[in-house]
Image (cartoon, one colour):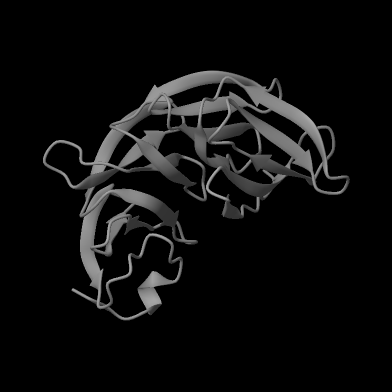
Length: 209
């Protein structure tokens, strides 16, 4: 199985892209996957030529995007449909739309590719927010992990043991969950008022419990 390197960033609120290594026509082929919150498709770009080399239609208002470690699948959160859309990168077709607990934002995939975590940007039942857990073998939502606020960004740690979710509200909570049990471990709150939702290094920046 080939390694995959993922870089996520927000593009003027409208799009998110990732840089990945895809085993498509050739080994170690690098492609950019770019979603568009104002459109209904994801573009695949060759960074060597800066040209679009593929389009995956049928994904309305895509937000978060990532790919499986072997580069065979793409996962995109659809804000229009409240689904996690799964596309086959060989055929460039959507193969499944997985219903979510609510309005999704960014997503993250476990290093082994067995789980995709989706941040839900609204209250769900008695929970201020949740991170939906998607099993990539069955392509179903198997659990929702409570967070202390609506989630915008979330990250899986490099060792695959934890998911860190940033609160999108002014409260600035950060929730940490264990991937082994898909359960919440602890909640922290920033000493400052600024939210932690856009802070990848939040665990090193002086939180208080």
